[in-house]
Amino acid sequence: MDLTDIKNYGNPQLLVRGGKGKKRRHVPLGAQELDTLHNWMSIRKGLASDRTQALFLTLDHRTKGRRLGTRGARSIVNQYLRQAGLKQPGRSCHALRHSLATWLLEAGVPTEAIADLLGHSSIAITAVYAKVVDMHKYTPSEVLLER
Image 1 (tube, rainbow, N blue to C red):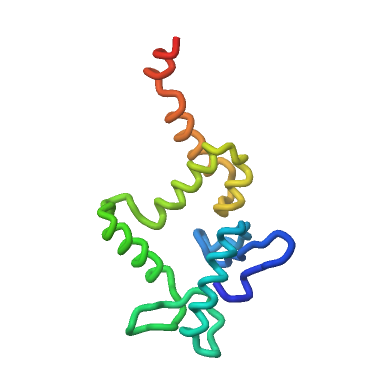
Image 2 (image 1 turned 135 degrees about the vertical axis):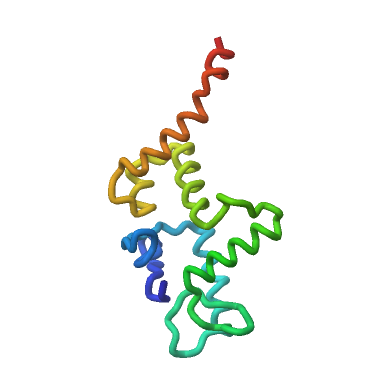
């Protein structure tokens, strides 16, 4: 992402050009996200060369100030998972996508909106998450215990 990918007017959003499936989409930004981005921008000023338009930069002493790539982002998430004692197979950046979809469905966000947010080409892909949510809501033992 580049600095120009932040749209901070009207309905603030972040343009994602090369995410999962290389699909282009707009991610809405709330007040908390805008505040976090604002804080990052003040830190970024001291790191970036005048030429880079990259939104996210590396902090590593060897590559400090360069564009943060997918591998770097994955490494950061894995590092925090290890520090928290949570790193194990299946816990990753990609798992965060799955968690987000599941939590949004549980909160009642329409499936179509989640499909757009995640860049799914078909709502059928997003419907897989709905089945997971339904399984958690309606386990046979819990339904029978309610009677």
